Length: 103
Image (cartoon, rainbow, N blue to C red; front, top):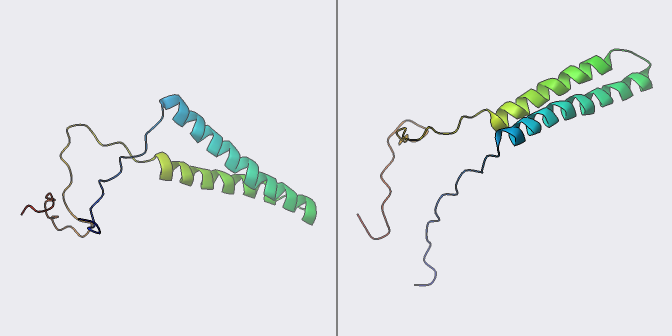
């Protein structure tokens, strides 16, 4: 029948690269954070004729980069064979999923 809404299968998790690719991405994020925020601090120091914003910018950049790395790569992949969690965020057990038309 046309017009019936069908549930779409869940998308698989984003593929993880090799360990080297992940390592290079982490190093690049860390260096970029220091360079961008440190550069902004250096520009502020030049403009205001001070010497405080460069170190503050580098530290701020490192903190932001660490946050981004943990946010992106911090979760461990699920262990094969581990039981699947079947509770909702509120803690109640979720209803088992069935095919359309089955009860």
